[in-house]
Amino acid sequence: MRLSDKVIIVTGGTSGIGQAIAERAVAEGARVLVHGIERRDGEVVVAKLGGRAALHLDDLLDPAAGGRIVAAALAAFGRIDGVVNNAAIVARGTLGATTPEFFDQMMAVNARAPFLLIQAAFPHLKASAGSVVNIGSINAYSGQPNLLAYSMAKGALQTLSRNLANAHAADRVRVNHLNVGWVLTTREYHHQIEHGMPSDWPEHVPAEFAPSGRLILPEEVASAVVYWLGDESRPISGSVVELEQYCIMGRNPDKQSAGK
Image (cartoon, rainbow, N blue to C red; front, top):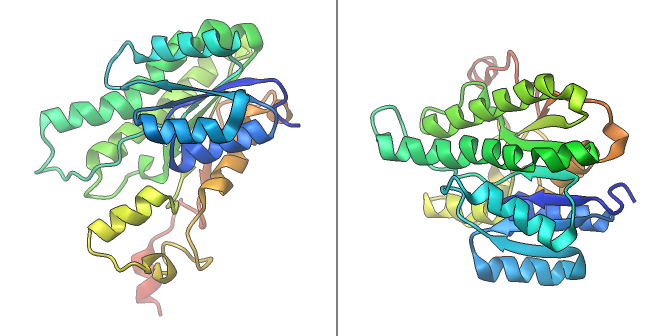
């Protein structure tokens, strides 16, 4: 198995992409510290994964959360081989509507928390020649007008990934980064309905967002994460990989539509 006996921390692992990563990691032989904030959701996930998973609830707005997550992983499994920074707040906000408090919250969870978790886990990752996978977003490149603070935070996360890869290659701690496109999670499904979309909206996503005819699935993101966590991707570090259905650079959907 590709992650045999490795211990992996997955933040935001109680639903969506994080849950899919936790499930796939266990299926590949890992033991997983599942982080989340909702006890009921977390208990369901960990029960499904059996004795190869442990649950830790913590609020990433607290700067001390990273240290507690690391301590929980060590208490449960005795070592750390990988960290997946998946947890994030996805909330709308434009230039005019973004308050200082909202901005600080977005940066704290989406950029500061991954940094602090890696910082706390680093001695253990160095000891195991471990791997970090940061789950970013294609919004890191410029983002949507109504996702300003979120896009800024994901840009910061991307820079964190590249910076740490350069700084710690000699420590044999690898840091790679996945910029993920539009993924059909349960939360995203309900989020779109709350904003006025019909119940069958995933079947009618415009082609400029899903040229394949459907959105990306959490399990497909998890498959990519397993590769970057595992030894088969060694010694590669500092990669920023777009998990999207089209080329990001140079693409302009408006021009495509105008040409039809």
